[in-house]
Length: 498
Image 1: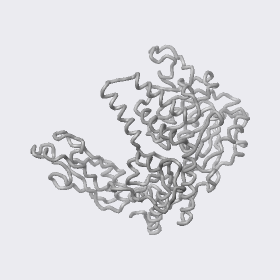
Image 2 (image 1 turned 180 degrees about the vertical axis):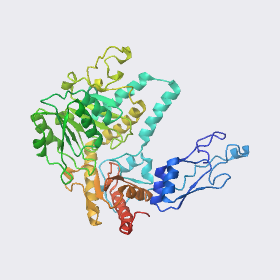
Image 3 (image 1 turned 135 degrees about the vertical axis):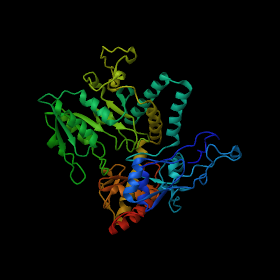
């Protein structure tokens, strides 16, 4: 691998690691060999995947790799010219500009009310890819990259700066609270929805007669797993089925009864984007005396959410999807009227009233939602999370919803026109940001083939999900649907290789 362009002459060369995912991309693109440089590292899994698909791994010339600087022991004359950017291995697809230019036939009415082009310039990947995988991972922005750098700079210059880092945790909580019309004192922070759901479950007592947990088949598996894991503590778990990709509100009347302790529902179904009528569901659940736990992970950031108006008891979300963040951080809202009655067993020293008292013998729960905090908080991911959420709050969830509805309608109508099968709700009012299209064979292979055409979608089960965000253009939807048709065309002949 040649020198990194930002590395000074004489510094060790940067390595590129070729992973099994890279090999899968190359195979989906129909490549027969992988060309690597002398400094590249091929992982053991990558070699296994290459062998499985019959791909050869070929080392570039033994001398200095093309387009790069010489090895570290080269003559000092090399310093006369700055090193050029590292040549990417052949499995990586790059483009100099966006795969689809702005459609000049569109008018101002075909753009949202905010500065779409201005925001797009803040997301570097949009210059060479159509990014429609926001239901899985949002793209990196200038803001989130700068936030990560701010933490690294603090760590580098201060060694440790816990006062500033704890301030950043508090600011991240406040930014999340702003998204859902809550107060920062009503927000806890964790590393994942799995962790914070476990903390909530550990605070409940599953004693008869009220020991039933109602969960829907639309929940992301981790949430269901947490409730199932508490069966050994007396929880009786019952699932509300999904029928034709949706759940009717009346179904909750059949499953939630006077023995139900808590009902766990999602805002948006991760598989096909079905959006539940939470406003109508919550009163029905409360009427039976049940608590309401709302997993908003799949929808928060795409439409307004007001926990006070909804009257939910708990709301959780991670940050890597529409909130423009990364894995490793999640937030929990707890209704303040409930806090004093809940003592989570899944806990840690930051859940204490006085964590820096370092009193191992006293379990003094914090007086607010902070009692659901756990161990040392996720500092670096909180920096990034706050930066992403500030963008969403600035653009505004209501404006984002309006534009996503327009994009979703474009995707449904465009899929119909191209003979593709949409499995998402067709009524835009019952649909979140995701539009799911059924594909034959392996949806993962389709995802990889689309990536080779500079379209980033998200595979799940038998569908490919197109999940735009506020920075997506109408012409991006058209481009992605056309590339999907191209990918699926050879499927009838036995594959999606291009």
